[in-house]
Amino acid sequence: MTTPAETTLSLSDVVARTGVPASTIHHYRRSGLIPLPQRQSANRFVYDASHVEAILVLRAQPAAEQHDCRERIVAAAIEAFKTRSYTEVSVSEIAEAAHMAKGNVYRYFASKEALLTAAIETLLDDTTDRFQAALDSQGGIEEVHRDPEKSAMALGYVVADVLPMLLELGARAAKGHEPSADLARRVLRTLALTAGRPFIADDADGEGDEAIQAGLKVIQSGFATVLTWSVGTDWPPDHLP
Image (cartoon, rainbow, N blue to C red; front, side, top):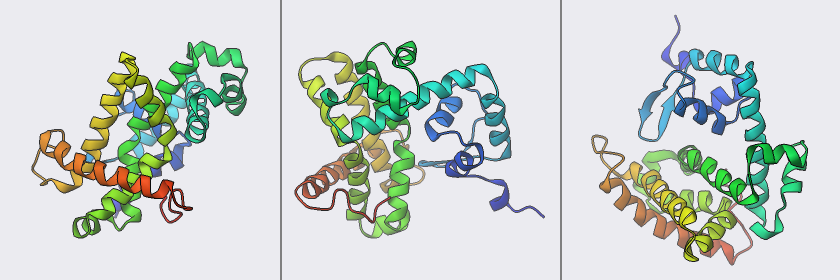
């Protein structure tokens, strides 16, 4: 007899079976292109074989191929912006890393600024999964409840991994660039909700003020952790994913 553990799949399982990046699967889900996965908790969805089949069908369609090209460009942009400042990154090198001509990049993105925005928005979609992976490395939700400092470690890893992009976004917002300011507010809200959900009651609204307030406390500790890492030799700690 098939057990529930054999019929349910995590997001990482679906990625492994289809070869489709998590950010693309999130796009399919938001666009209604695949069946809605079951929400297992505030932080995690559960998939099954029907989702794998639907994704594989999408992969065979021309529209999916176009989306995959876009995702390749965004993935290359994320890797570039994660390690260097905005001015140090060129569209030409992003195109080379994505294995396509520079002109093809401009078919999907009007400018390098649009690429930065897409990179940050993609990371926003993956924030919950990356934070959950970092929490798992710290012993999971139960361990975090026993030692709240571990949540700061987990969030610190998520922030440190994309710090150059967050600094660029903050600088643009501080200069009065309204689209950047709007995106910065979304980033802060997403981080607060993601970090705060493990600390609210199961029957509480995971999208409300209680989660945000709990998350803001974690964010303060998380950024303090990042600052400590930034003056040390371990950036970020090797034992985190």
